[in-house]
Length: 100
Image (cartoon, rainbow, N blue to C red; front, side):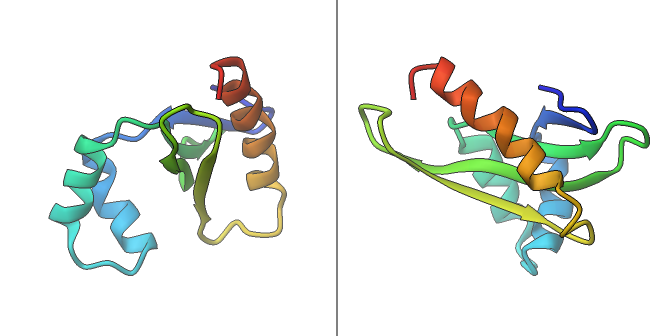
């Protein structure tokens, strides 16, 4: 997925170290396992111009009928610049299109 300033790419196990750092979590292996075992949408946000990763957005929980979900997201140093709003304005309609 793309927005005006961002790329939303699927999180991969190699992203575990960076995500663990953002979460102040020293258990990189656990984060890697969580990524591998995750079956819900989980995206890394990167700035289009530089490809710099700045955060993530994911579904943390979804009911069986896919009618309710809890989102979890994080931005590091780029808070207050509208990046997460931009990502959510793309992410949420995509979920609706998928029937969530």
